[in-house]
Image (spheres, rainbow, N blue to C red):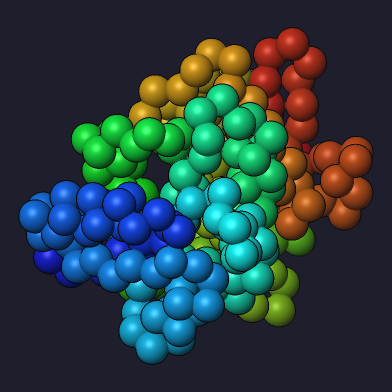
Length: 237
């Protein structure tokens, strides 16, 4: 998906931020709508397709986390959360709820654009039509099957399990490295398109979310196991 085809929705209670992002992204070919809060955001989402949302966490009437909670899991549009600098708790909660990325305020516009492009590249994988899957294009995760050709996680009854773009990329990385122990840096390098702080623990949060979807008992994972002091391993055996 290129910028000319992409509709971005910016939700922030600060009019200066909305206008700045609308001008900057608009000049780069994106179609940009703005909302001052949850009510306006929901009206836009109900009226037109939205490819990506940029949402401030700290808004007075209804904060971004509450809005995100109300959207998931029925609406899996990628979301970049804007957080106060150093507000780790909000970042963790946002990731737990299914946010795809976060960026601290004040916003670095070039970095925001890079994050947007990275998410759209990953989302493009889910737009590929299935041409019929083979064993090499599938990987079993317990009672579920990752269809890499269709970019979907399927339950035993054939229904699709909703995944964020990052969750899909993580499962794909595990499927392509079956039985290999991967540390956090390796997972982030292959599943994400930006550099991470070495103390960033967001990968643990993503895997915790995946375990709640895949494991019979997420507290005693058997599909994606922790290798203490090293990282994680996917071994269907």
